[in-house]
Amino acid sequence: MLKTLRGKRRRRIAARAAGIAILAGTLGSCSLDVFDPDIIRPEDVSDPASLPIAIAGVVGDFQLSYDEYTRYTGMFTDEFILAGTFPTRVQVDERKILSDNSTLNGVYELLHVSRFSADNLVQAAQGLVGDPDADQDLVERGIAFGQFYGGYIRLLFGEMYCQSILGGGDETNPNYESAPRTPDERVQDALSFLQAAEASAAAIGNADMRLAAVVGQARAHMWLENYGQAVSLLSQVPTDFEFVSEYSSNDPSQYNDVYMFTYADGGQVIRWTVGDGTQPERNFERFPFYDEFVDAGLLDPDPPPSFQAFNGNIRVHLQMIYPYAIAPGQPAIPPSASGQAAAMFMATGHEARIMEAEAQYRAGDVAGAEAKINALLTTGDNPHGAIFAPVDLTGDFASDIALIGYAYEVGAWLTGHRLGFLRRVFRNDGVDLYPSVQPGRDYSFPVVKQELDNNPDINQACPSGEAGSWPA
Image (tube, rainbow, N blue to C red; front, side):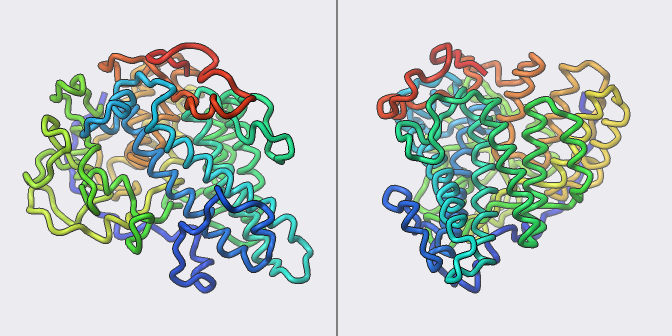
């Protein structure tokens, strides 16, 4: 059970720059949305002069996919409820998704765009190794960036979908797959990429990317039940480590859409909010740590009346980690450039410590796991610098693993982490922590019908099941 503790929030001043800084001198203010995989082929980035743009494109494509992933998986689990009315989004909130859900075509496409551009960059950069006309430092950076983002996006595919296929239908494609892969196979695939990325990042002296690749590997090992291997990697990750996906207020295509759709900025309206258990249209779904996050200052339960959901029947409860510069209960100011450019965590030292604590718990050291977790929660030694209620682990696995999930959320809330945790606990341990009030019982997202219609190497959305019961 959670022990009662109220505390003040200490605002995190700024996320650490974590990847594209190396491009600043080369690209200036170049937009990150210029790399279009629909028209760019591998040979188009084989010119050494195109490498800086290709690297920026990989980062930008990942940004676009990451906030989409975070919004939809957050709504699928319990971090958000739908504050809009689109029936296709209702399917996600209710965990009853049809494979012909047209809205999810966009999410699926963006993830594939990100994966394609990362793989394309690796292929092009490897083709320039030893080329006297190519800056070999930049070539090595291109390989490292492509491997890292290619590995991370594969990890997200494994955590989100019941199965996945990359590069089907074209046997000349170096990433051709003749059949869809299971989640475990995809996560193992991601692990290999991230191992390569760790070595490549070390070779170019990018310590932050190397550590982020280490955290990603540990996350993959946790999925695959290799808890000891995860722990063996994590001791090198400092608790204050942060690696982020960066956004920008320079152009709407670069805005953080988690912020945009929860605060109604840039012509958007509020279509995502946090459930407090009082909304009948959303089956009374409640974020399970609602009170703790309110107490920590990361949730505003009573925002100004100017914050109205697109669905007027849904009351808005504001997430406060990608916000306007307002204090709870105070009048809103105009849209904030800091919100538009709010960075999202990809890998943190906090996550590393909680993975260690979970592995410690699974090895039988309940008291040690509790102490490690509470040292982060109750001291503000977490990414948000906030004081959270401590946990009381009792030795009952089902209740304790839910509290370990709470500890993850303290540092990984609204970063796309929640679905991967819920799925692996259900798959590996048989403990169902998904929102039970919803009418559906999907545990994963199906492959979209657009893929089924156009890829001869896949013919069913999931290996078994139907909408409302997609397997884990």
